[in-house]
Length: 104
Image (cartoon, rainbow, N blue to C red; front, side, top):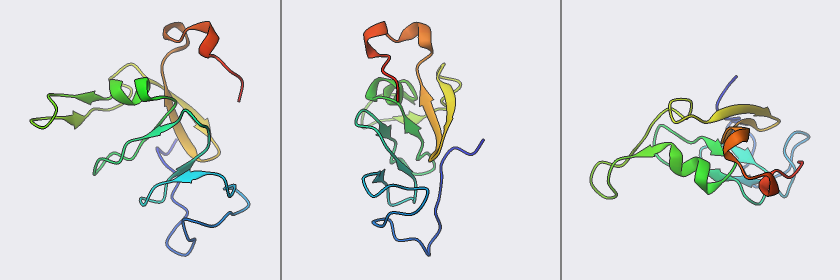
């Protein structure tokens, strides 16, 4: 399953398409996602989308400003879920408090 969805250079990042609603958030890399609690890593070579800031923080290692880098989300214990916009990396269900599990 691909990590991100890239609509291609002929699709402006600001327009809605049949697959991408006009309210979707997007990155200059071409990836897009929906959901208020989503996080997207803008680091060169990464550009993965996460279910929350906590999940995104788990895929980062090293000291801020010194050797901070991305690691593979699966290596960080995150779980991939296929979405219309590509892969959403999330915490395993056992790590998420039940009050944070809202249906999409």
